[in-house]
Image (tube, rainbow, N blue to C red; front, side):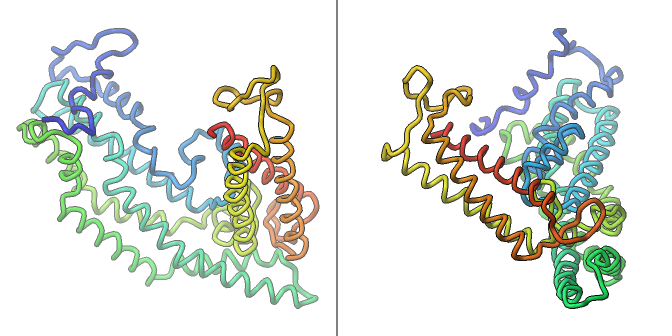
Length: 395
């Protein structure tokens, strides 16, 4: 019996039978399988493969959408994106190499091979063991690099503030030096190697891949000879590449400081696209989070109590379930949102001025100026408006 929470392995592949309106012949022999078709299956499953993989939405987007998405993110670090995208490249290469092996193996039909590749090129391909290694690297960098550099930065900021002969831009070389020292430190590389090696050994011993297949598909499918051979082929493919996964993970770690923004992101967070020292950005993150959380609760209470309402232009109540446009927003809902934006703006402005916020702007580390503040305020209030408007539309 098929696991009711998932489609049958073979039913899942029905939509892959049709390409550009033409029926793909089911009688194709193994010799005539086209690797380009396997590549199309891998590309087709990319949204599934990376759906829950990314720390940031922008990492799953193309370059065109990248900057606009960064402007919608209030806690972004370039070095994390570098880790994500480096592992994405490893995953894609692994799938391509496996597709070649699946193509030439003298077992199973064309349809069975297509279906199996479709099954493993989704979440399975990204999660096991690549996301596990990805998360290990990110957690390790947070602990061994980012926290160390950030703590040292705060100490140096205080020293510079109390000195007449120093300027904040000196911090660039200090951050780069501390980051590089931590990244090339042999003890750190050995510890990371040990952690990833242990994870891979545990992954192999517990046969996570086989268990994942058993949880998704019927016992009949899992126990068929062809299916079992394909699982073994994929498991062996991963096992043959454990050393490569390990060495590339360490290589990713070692090269995280090789571009300036990535290096500076050990100490600075991108807050709606603007780089602010982690200590100060953390407080701004908190302003956004608390404002959004409590304003949504307040908005719900006001709507339920009838103290504020929203109507369409013809006087009929409009719950925003369709398109939202300015003409359909009631005056009092918009007043609530505008007042909320004003309060957030005042709170952020006060903090940026009083705290002498340190920023990385135009390649220079300096104190936040009026132009920088305006950009932060614009994108912060825009974000809050979008979140509150979206919340109303779902009410």
